[in-house]
Image (tube, rainbow, N blue to C red; front, side, top):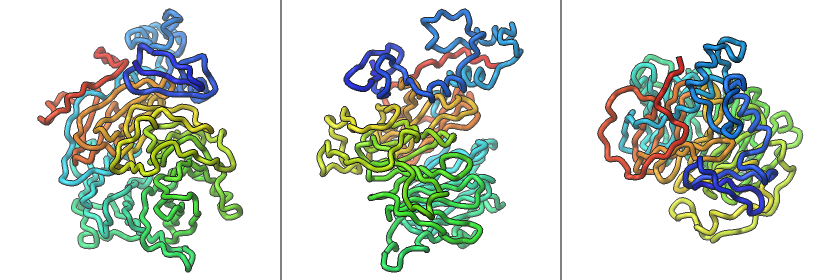
Length: 486
């Protein structure tokens, strides 16, 4: 049984969850479920109309309302609208998790480090350590639309990002220079500065003359919502903002006391930026205060090890983070503090996540000043900067969070209950990145084994590519075969 732990030592079993995951929330000891505003927001986005479930006994309200019952309620116009609301649709769609498969999309001879769908789901981008980036056209049978061979690569591709208009792609490596390429051109083979120009954007500009930044690398780079700027974090402990119109690095903030592994914009306004670092802190930055203060708006404490990735809920209020303490945490920036607190050393100081297992006794430890709303455990964050995300708003109402894992799996957790809703086993190496299609029930995972794999519900009907499958069994909840939306 998995456990949903509350503050103190209170814990209770939940017969509807799977082994290995739990969520903790400090302000409520009487319920197994996250008792916070985001839980109500998630319910509003993904819960059925009460009139469609009016004959469901109260003791079963935590379980999904069956699709058949909802369809009957729609036909009987129980809600008075004569149709499903977006929340009704999300409630139905979110039950059919993309757990069937996998179908192999591609396989390269080098490790896959990054992979993401475009905002509209028509394109899929995958970046490999060997210097290849491939852009697949999802609507045309995953045909390779652009095959990019990168320039001046140091170690690996650390991040990629597609512009909002889907015309340009930026890619970063362990170098202060980020390159940009036109993915909207008609050329399929994009060989850097041979068949196409890959312009270099130098993030080492605007540095102090007495500092040496030649050796720093970029771990994370993101386009602003209007496509005019890039925000980046790197091994120089700093956050950078690059203006694409003036072609200059216009801002550098010494943000953390260690590598900045991840940055992202909080919402579409572009005013707030989240950052996570190997100094164990998540920080919130208001760009309107950069020039006058040069300090973080707030700090969020809770991780016992470095942060590998941050994903925003998109509302400028909530985000999740993956940590090397083997947890994903959910945050509300309204709980942030103005300064940092001392972090106790609770494990072997010689531990290194790149080649050592996490100490078993450290897995149950909790930061004494943990400000997070919930903690999710089960996946493994070792060897590389494993990424985590909220599930799509359109199809699931952001009801789930999901993460890659060092054990070669993708883990899906229920945001509110903390239950492990699904575990997708296939890869023979760490799954560093994974992406949920913004519309369809489809997840694509990318791994150090070089494989890009596609998971769907109900599936395309094709026979999966013959592969050697791992022996561990997939676990998932709430998935039924009576798929009847229309």
